[in-house]
Image (cartoon, rainbow, N blue to C red; front, side):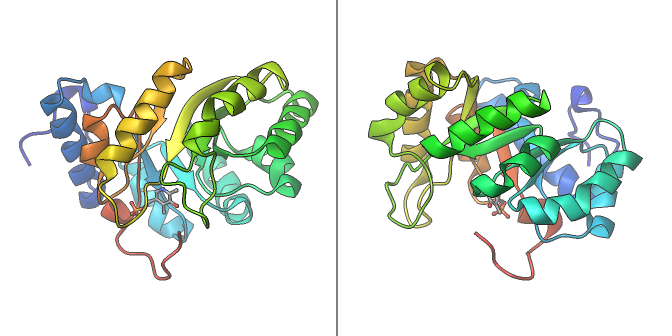
Length: 234
Ligand SMILES: *Cc1c(COP(=O)(O)O)cnc(C)c1O
């Protein structure tokens, strides 16, 4: 491979990771953005430590998980062996797991309701630990999907900030599987801009290049790095 941009400092012998990094660099450059302004979150859900370690050893430090319980079993040990790991929670968070989530994660991307905002605010105060917080937007207004509806976003973000004193730094979305993702990414970017939110977590294996074109600062990529998951999880 000859086109690794030097500033990414790719020391990777993990082909999936190297390919995704290169695709991110190309997409960013084509969009007139700096590749370094797009953070790759390697989504390691369902993969056990032995599959994750080669990716860490290839230089990746930012990882995403969708279950608190699975993360508690997998990551403390990996974190103790490798420095600089940054963990993002990208799956639904129940209030009874909020304490664990605040203790383990560096960023919680799925803040999606008032009660969770209240419980997180309490936990953050109690533990003296402040993970970054992203609000999840249900951009497709899908009945079965978590997230704040676009029309409620402004009020919810304001309430998180003013009522609970939470610093909201990003938005996250998972567009409907059967729709053109670009429309959803554009909507999320607009909501973010209007509400003084600077980070956009959008784009997965199938559409991260499009997301980068629409301003994604964080892309969440699983199968393109790790291969197909044994069991399809949301
Ligand atoms: C699993 C998952 C991803 C990664 O999906 P891939 O298609 O494997 O890249 C991204 N975001 C969320 C919220 C997920 O649950």
